[in-house]
Length: 151
Image 1 (cartoon, one colour):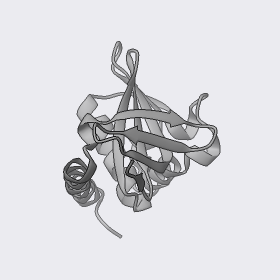
Image 2 (cartoon, one colour):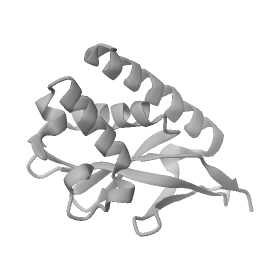
Image 3 (cartoon, one colour):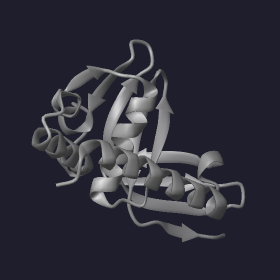
Image 4 (spheres, one colour):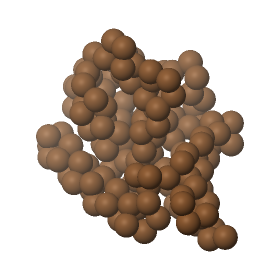
């Protein structure tokens, strides 16, 4: 059984490498985004006219006004099919007795929100993660295999 601290380190390193690769290939950091939680897909568009789509999972939401995180595995706006990666983190938290991963709503920093998302991506072997702002809320998501259409 892997040490939880080591899992977080590996997860953050993995996500950093994935993000750098996505930025270099199609401009993840600058792309416009839209998510459809009904279909379970995220779509990015870049300044080259490319459309990049992938299956999406919601890990949680971060309220920038009060610094609280609400897990996707028990979020009223997140259906079970798009909360599977968050549920993996919940199971990891139970296995290692980590309250922050098993408590529905917690006060954390944005850095911790990224750590939670990276862990979800690592556990699910996702292709990457994204943080999308919706007003004062930040939605943290993982995504699967990308389909890139160049127009």
